[in-house]
Length: 481
Image (cartoon, rainbow, N blue to C red; front, side, top):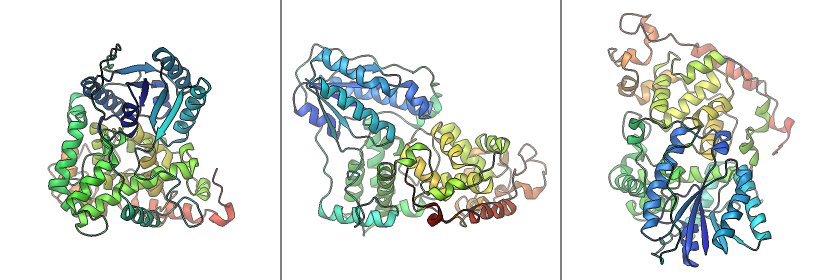
């Protein structure tokens, strides 16, 4: 008997470990509920709910193939080895199959599980699945992990020219086992169930993920490059939550993009090329997790920036979190996050730079808050994005590049449609005033909207001074741990 331990791979199709396990004999699936660990990782309630809903869909699909899905609890990952050993003994499991995961805690958990099972003569097989290339196979000429995306992408392109990662077949129907699937819990203690409106935005299941991918590749990918920065337009794929939970694979996404672009990833349709680059950014940040594990430990990628004199400003942090900064594009973006579990990518950069530069508040505060609310929260991508905006990370924005929220708002929400949707109290303003109601001096119609909590010009100067005072990288040395 083979056991597949499902984690961030909640799908039937193109699932490497599931395909391998089913190919070796009768197969059973297990999923571990780990609420204590999820809280340590700041996983959002809406994301945990999304996992459970996808498990429900997957359980039905597996049931048609006579593959039981069992649910066990390992509240903390330290409990996982014993929980899985017990199950393996009960079912007389020969091998446990998993798809690789890449954070420090995930790697330690898997190593501990493998070590305990192998001591009891139970095999442990792991597979490359949530990435196109295994970490450690895309390296510089000196054998180190890339720190600059464009160089990383170039090597990925060379690899893709040589051979495209193939998709694997879904398992076939097996003989019925004398094992019943467990019920999927509707909720997990400690994680509040989101409202129906948020759930309706993110239907569960592979069918929905595939529908979104096909619709995007058929209808929207050509316009992706030109429309992806405008939050009022439906310019993005809306697949990030499905990729993060593994309801769809990066290989499926890559093949769909290539099919829409006659097999090209460097030339042809600029929209498809741009979207494939976004898949490679996702790849890059996961490779960074492995090559530079300090980023999994709340450490800055650039060690010299650990000396930054971040401000302790709890009231300003709270105003940012509660969408009452007095800057409409910031507040509209934060309301989108709070109500939908998602934020448009351009706005993720704008609000992150506002927090870390204009408010000079530690990027870790923003990273944590995002993880606690994002349905697509992913350690690698979220950390990478926050450190990019804070100028502490790989390939980061130069510290003197500080987005001005007003000019970003005027450029990417020209008509104020996004702002007015999320801040209906500003709906009566014209498209010029809606970006900066403070210019009106609290006139009728915006009396309920707060004044800006910070002066953009003086706060920019403050941020520049803080970064200029940092020791150089040479002075601090390249401390990687």
